[in-house]
Image 1 (spheres, rainbow, N blue to C red):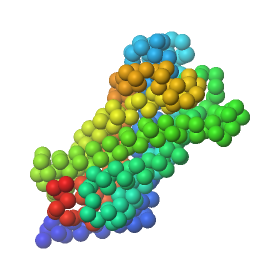
Image 2 (image 1 turned 90 degrees about the vertical axis):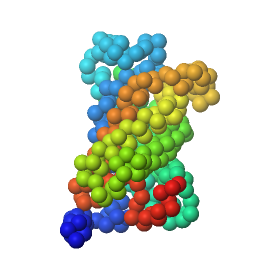
Image 3 (image 1 turned 90 degrees about the horizontal axis):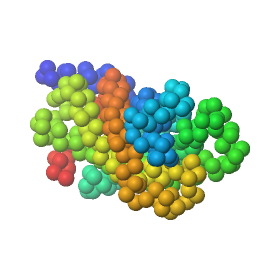
Length: 316
């Protein structure tokens, strides 16, 4: 009886009900905040990563690359493109997390007897398509600002110059490589996260999410987020290299970029720095995102949703 009263009290503190318009709006806001803040924080690593991809002979490693950037361009170079990171990835994160929650409910209701992995793949892919369309103009400006010191002073100036130089198409020339990078990453990341959360509760803690404290739930979120980010990084690394080549005019087509980079380098170039970036970033994103959920009285992410309480699904 006491447990029931406690659950009812928590329910009463919710800002909105799950799967309501307010819930999707809250998830979108949480995604914007978590993605924008985390990507802003790792701007120096992102600057180094992009330069390593464009000029690997000059920027050979993480420590030597930072020294070269600092010595030749000053400490301000490490924060070049910060506004594109904050606003671009904030918009992308809002679309990615908010639409993922929406599509997960949509596909669960539409594909009633389908395995959960298929639901996660479809939901994350659908959300990422829209998220990358929103990100693409910001990414186009950010990459050129980071690798061409005199291209623009910032985001606003960069938008203007890119439009004057290349027209509207210049903002979206990297959309297909972005999809090539982010779609596999998002599909693997969300699916790995969901299954990791489920595995942690069923096999490690061996308790339902509802029976765990908020601190335990957020701990599982962080562990699952790190695993998901690291696995997704390896899958998406080739497309990330292609994006940097295209935006910096090192190649005119995807085929030409692959030829110049080389098949082995496509998978290995900048991979250590990307793992250094993406693993902690994805972990922090999920932590901030779920913290916002907790503070608004909602359950943390992952595992079965309220309308999926079918014990048969636990075996899939």
